[in-house]
Length: 489
Image: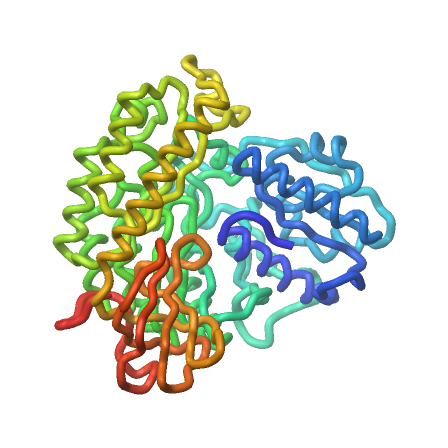
């Protein structure tokens, strides 16, 4: 059971592959002997959802094991507070089958004491490549040899048929799959606890990513969603800050992959060269998932972030000069300690001017161990809720306007589901899975999940679009993504 973000989905699929290699069978329903819950520990609501799922799983009579971020973050404390579940660390993932063997045999596994995982890797990014002894979820290639140990990255007694293979078992079908390009984060945002339990930033080698992309294409995947805690930092620990710019065309060229989408971009690290690659490379979606968080310079400085409304507007102008139809989404925190009415007005002005396609609005909540939790100027919960409601109303209006402005455009839509009677649901280049809107397509010909179809947008409903499929066979209209003459996205 996977909770949280797309990064957790990749981690769960690595766990599933390791379990199958160790003799376990992945199943659904009441017949499971062990329920493994990959938890989320990001904010209070996510923590509570994870706890509720663990308690619910325990009522089935199966053994319950907590893995993932909540388990890593709290370790023995979670095990003590929640005796219904056993608690594993990221360090247990490499031998997960043996751990569950022990659970099934009635053993009570010792829970770990939480530690700052940033300290497990060298401070200097260049010193992290090839570091042994630290398991990073979602980074495994089966059959590879762990550097400096000579130990295969597989459970004992198993091996791939020939050479390294992708250590992953898909748990969900469909034409879209996340591909983890890196883990961890070196930024020190004052409100965020993620680096402490996810660790320092660590890139995956490009050759592993291209190999996994090819494997996913063989599994029927047509769109890759590149995920990490900070995709704009990709390659810095490998000695190449432009590595993402080089990787994107390689991934887009993998046979069977029609679209590559990048998520989790830091505005302060978005280089002009990366903007150019993302807006001009066939097969790469001109889609910018930018972590603005706020638009008031003073609030952003308190968050230990960079920028302000003027700088962010200039960045958006740069993107739209390169590709006027580019999609942009972002999330914003409202009610941060010390946020004034003037700060809120600055954020509202930015949303009114920026024309974002998708906007997430979250109320601030203290996270233990973060600098923000110690700041003065804390706002009460009622005031934060009021500000969230006001900004969310504005966000809904802005997103609806942006969607309506796309009426008349042509777009490439990846079909994901049939609704029957000639109607299908898919997503255009500016619509990421799960978090953004969808496009409902009417077609005179039969379509199937995985088809890439050229459409003309005919209407909108909030953030969602309606469209008509244009003439031509699906899947042969060219790759989705960068600019081409007489075509919009």
